[in-house]
View 1 (cartoon, one colour):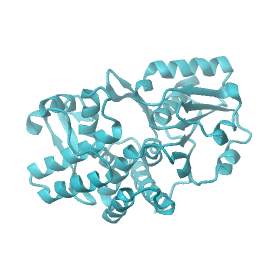
View 2 (tube, one colour):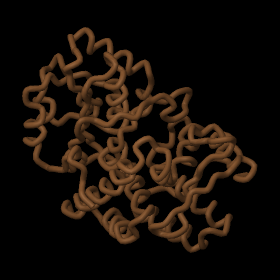
View 3 (cartoon, helix red, strand yellow):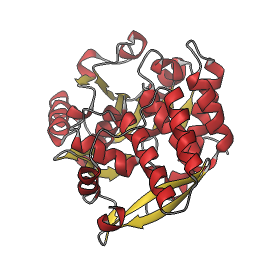
Length: 327
């Protein structure tokens, strides 16, 4: 399995500079991006800063950015470059899809979470009334530039959770390697980190290519997210996305055990592995609150929500459940 041509995995920023030559680039950066080698690539009046994190992920931010593009004279030939974490890549993709009915877009994810998940797959969106990604589009960026060193020093927990989730779908060997790598003390092997990122991106890209509009096999990527999004909603963002996904995977595994589809030892192993990697395993919410929030999940069909449940390391199943069945 190889990376798509649209995904560039390199530690050399010169490659990015070459891809931008001759383009009218407008960069959307979140406020955590300080790397001067990046900011120096753009005209100061073509750099638009936004707040990092879920609080900025709303239509008001998209409208404010669109107004800045209009004032700067951006036309249909513009290239919007989103540089930052998952909020920034999601917002930039949606902005590019809407501004003048669509302009080119490229992404430079600067967190591990964005590099292995958020920036990959062409899903763009913002939240609505506290519910995740209720407004959005499917639209692939022109290219994604993944530079692992850009994420060094950032909080990796969200990326670790998403990476373990991806490997739980179909690659038990990569899952075991990732647990060893992320439970090791710092500094960790840069070559192994690069290898794990590549493998995670390969798996997700393959599912996206097979099912771009999320109507079938791509559902598997929602492992941990149905419960996870409910936890985020009920805690009003106090629990981060990565932590919520980790908790959600454990809840999904417990559900599989109760349905007789997995052995209790699976839950025990996942809790042990996640704890070793610094991830939480226990939801802080009462289950009734979770069930109520899950019932409003955007993946609900005919009153049932499609749950992705781990049944073994490297193997999952999809099970629709109505709230009363889940209860």
